[in-house]
Amino acid sequence: MMAPEAYRSEAYYRAELDCVFPSSWVFVGHERWVPEPGDYLAETIGTEPVLVVRNPDGALRAFSNVCPHRASLLVTGRGSCDRRLVCPYHGWTFGLDGRLLAIPRQRGFVGGVDTADYGLHELRLDVWEGLIFVNATGGAPPLRDHLEGVPELLAGHDIAGMTLGAFLDDPIAANWKLVMDNAICDYHLGMVHGESIADLVELEGLSEQAGHTTAVASVPWKESALPPEPRPTLTGDAARGSLGCFVFPNLHVIGFPTGGATVMWWTPTGPASTRARVLSLSHDADADVRAGAELLSRVQREDFDVCEKLQIGVQSRHYSPGPLHASELRVTVFQRRLLEMVEPVLAARAGAGVNRG
Ligand code: FES
Ligand SMILES: [Fe+2]
Image (cartoon, rainbow, N blue to C red):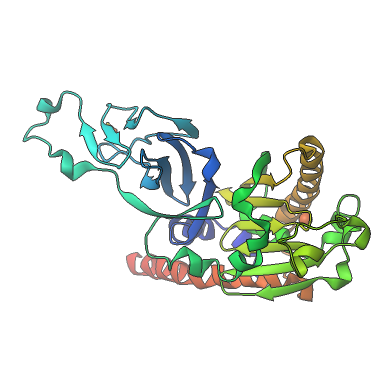
């Protein structure tokens, strides 16, 4: 298990923001959040502000959300523009293809400006089942490789065809890795969620599979909790229970035997703070969305309370990690991949610090 310092150190946090997030495929939002040309969403991937915008031809494109003039963010949140992105600082105007189209009072630039030199920096974008991913550095292997066997496992759920339901967005006073560890730890279900979801599942039948950038938990449901008629496209484990699919670095997609799904993701906002988002999806437009949201919110609260206690615990001089349970296999996949990426960065930075000294 990861050393306690990893959950409290500013150096770890900085290395994750500078390196781990930008060099990975990171989920930034759902395609239906940007349905029309000119619709955009902004997100920060580690240290990189990015924007995703729908072009007139229907394609999504991702750009650095940093104006090449003086670095203002171009857009924030989600919204729609009139087929041009206008920088809020001095008004440089960009097309949805990233080209610089207009510069206010252009003749005032001594020596002139060639607009071709100042387009927006385009980033790699790919979409799986309506979920948009961006790789800010451009060097990651293809998204399909990164997702390993997850698309096949969840193919029968047809996530792309689902309707968007509840969306929750909450702050947690804990390091994002504690929140991530907890989300993919299957050892805590009976204890922490005893009042909410633990009764639905057969904990003894739980199994896990480890990949390199993904890990899957198959959690069988009790017969009484299963729908009387499963969705015909769901077979095997997908029809018998939940499939909890972790995708490095910070995404968890759960497919349910009812045919629905939840997409959960966690964004670091400080060494001891995290933004937790969850989007619920369903094929059943008549589903009781409010009841679903209440259950989701209750489960989240149960988890957040634990994570905030863990954050206090990892600061203690009397803590060193205890033994690993078989139901924590997915946590080891997450931590192994993270350490592979972060440790060389920390070592290089420590070396540079020594040389400078
Ligand atoms: S910073 Fe964008 S126009 Fe100046
Ligand atoms: Fe939990």
